Image (tube, rainbow, N blue to C red):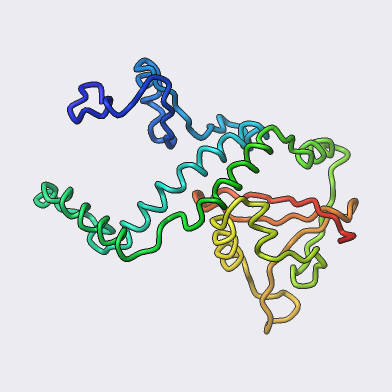
Length: 237
């Protein structure tokens, strides 16, 4: 990019924002010297989780990058692009990519089907950008001698306020997390300890507060890590 062999810099203006993933972290200083701004997901830096403001801004970045990942996913659906490509045919890659993208544009659904819905999601996310994580603050208070206690239950027997998919989309600002949740649940369903003929998905209910429930999930990126997702809900609805 510094050599500008492909005249990429001619596309950009001062203070343009480049949305990058963490793999480009070593380019940030160079891009800043070129007068460009960089939006990139935050790093944990030995923290267990990000503060609410950093987490919200990181979601902004990943939400903007979703379109890129969606297009990459469509391209990788083609067998040729989903495998290791031999060096001998790399000179033809650009032509092959043009053909594949043309076929995708012609015959497949667009990545974003409802532009207005996307605008509404963006506006809602901006309104909630500075929202504090009150649940996190509440849980932090219960450490040490005041730790909360949890008991395991089959999710099928747990009375959680009913939600339709539209309600969940309003919480997650889109459908990606919903699709991921389905696969997560399938991976964590196990045989019931009390009935060998049944399968169960375990959740943990708080013994001290009847409006808290949590679940443990295996990390998608590391077999040595597990995450705990805690939800506060209104049990009168």
